[in-house]
Length: 248
Image 1 (cartoon, helix red, strand yellow):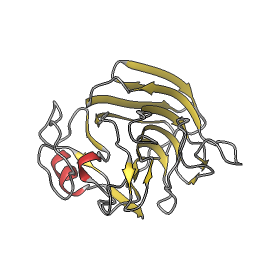
Image 2 (cartoon, helix red, strand yellow):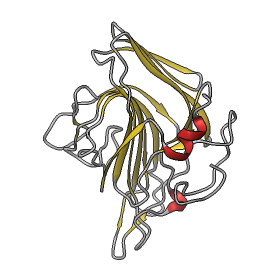
Image 3 (cartoon, one colour):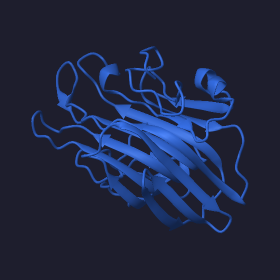
């Protein structure tokens, strides 16, 4: 993570447990995701990660002729992912987000949602971490003609939080009783969705003139596990054990 490469768009500090990290994104742009090959059974599912959260404000995005509000979404969840349907979405209530956005991702997830300015200098940026029950997939945006199908279980406002590595945890038992952690914040919940795959999704909608993926401002999902297994090196290099799904 400290070295800029085709995989790592900008340098960040190494996690406290390792000099390596795992990333999941398609540098050519659009939406993408990865899912574990193995599936959790219905007894217990979960993950315990160190995740890099980049809370820098997204600048106003610009094409060669106009400007627009940029956005970036990172998802770490337990459930299912439809690689053909990971469109832009808006669950945090920010003006200018996508409306009536159908998303095939299901289950429970932590989702980091960032929005840039709507007008240069206005300062109406947003950085929120949301614990979301995505049910069996559906409308993933506020506004429009369809009701929001995803349920926001908890919201953590990160606008005054420094960028860095944070503990992100999700645990669900056979009865659907769940516990979620971000740093020192712990949230309890219940859900009908308590099995599936570990999955990571990413979608960005940013631009700097002709550059549709301006590396300097992007931070695709970047994480390492707690505790660090001996296979992390293989995972970091080749995403061993994951099946990638991508969509432009």
